Length: 164
Figure: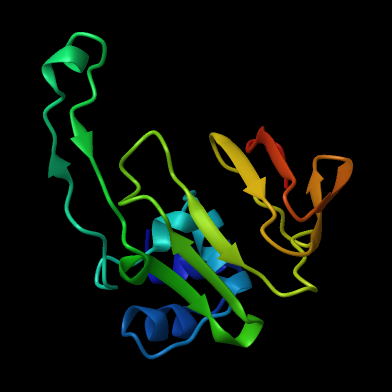
């Protein structure tokens, strides 16, 4: 796909894409969301590898009494100060990857979003399931035609192929 084709699909200028490629642009979250959708990728796939990343996977051998009961082979640790991040200063928004990478069955993100955050103009849709846990405050989550209000400590899980 050419830059012009991507720009047309995403509804942004090819100049903006060129600036982002060269590390000169500071795209908004909406722009990154449009680019991810045009590339048919979840926005989490845009986490950069050059941002300080997690510790490498550590080999782990189960104790003899557990070896027969589990096939757990590896353990991965992501330290708080070593998370991969997407930062959108204009929107006061930060997404942090809590899992080591995007090559696993489980992908966990921590999102810090402003009070007026709204995805109704361009809802997310991607393969898999999504789980949202509210650490502080309240949030109204829209999944398909439903609106569910969550408060501190509440959690919701839903099919991510449904617009949300």
